[in-house]
Image (cartoon, rainbow, N blue to C red; front, top):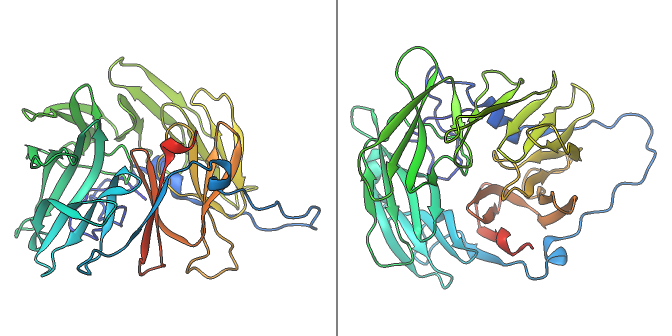
Amino acid sequence: MNLRRWRGAARLPGAARRYRPGLVGLAVAVAAGTALVTVPQAGPRTADPAPPPRRVTQEWPGAVRHDLPARLAGGTAYSPVWFLDAATSIGTAPSSDGRYLRLLRRAADGAVRELRRLPATGSPEYAGFTGSGAVLAWAELTTGRDGRGHTELWTAEPGSDRPARRVTTDGGDVLFASSRHDLVIGSGRLHWVAAAPGGAPATEVRSVPLAGGRVAVRTEPGAWTLSAWPWLVSAATGGTGPVRLRNLVEGTERTVPAGPDELLSCGPVWCRTLLPAGAGPGRLDLLRPDGRDRHRVAGGNVSAALVDVAVRDRFEVLRHTEPSAPTDGTTQLRLYDVTRRRTLLVADGVGLVFCRGDVLWWSTGGRTVTGWHALDLRTLT
């Protein structure tokens, strides 16, 4: 996966988007988060297979989960993009006549309230959801008849009856990486990154007051993505190499080295390294950006399920798939708990996996999604 300019593609969150010309490969450091780690069996078997991990609900009996149908009462497909809690979601669904793509608040009892709607003729997308307190923010991306993309940023208070409000129409050439930090709220402002004009690689760090106003633009040489505020993370131009972390407030920078065959992804608290099979024994490790506390998380048929490293600075979200098993419904969703240094089973037969805010959610049903399931990570204490 690469750093992407979101324009007129599939409407499920995290779906493939067209690359911006000239920026292919800029987020390979982020892309390392989804590279499959497969370890071929070699030599005689010397030990019995490891026992299956305990389930999250066994480890945390008070864990809050919720299941919701993949279709609304009227039959239209529903795709969650944010959860206010495990039972109350924000999501997208077409109108019954197919003329609009709607942004909805869906309550635990299935009742829906429309927040926004965009004409389907503009290939609309709602993207980059983030929240702070009662405020939810997102980007709206549409394509005009001339083929040019247009970006607006919006906010709403889904818990109230007040209408959504447009924050700005000056989004720039926005770049998203399917990360929970594509949009970030910090210091009373909404932040995002965009491609800077010109031939040399450069990134615009843009921000606007949550109440609306003039967009501030700060240009940083090189390719960067946003992480937890106020950090930027370098987007590598190749599959391996070091990662830089830059603090936009303090002006400090640190470099995290990588081994010759390692794929490295970082946030300000944890980094993830992947050593793909073929370069040696495949494995996934976590370590601090200063190199401390490096330890193995997984090997075998395991991959990182998210771009982001160690959500809530504690949980690494993993997929486990047996190579000999069919592809429809045999993937396990697992959580590695950094605090307890153990891996736990969340669910079997998962498809799409997302995490925004404090809620992890996933689909079941294979290519034809039949259900969505959410786990509130705040309840894993």
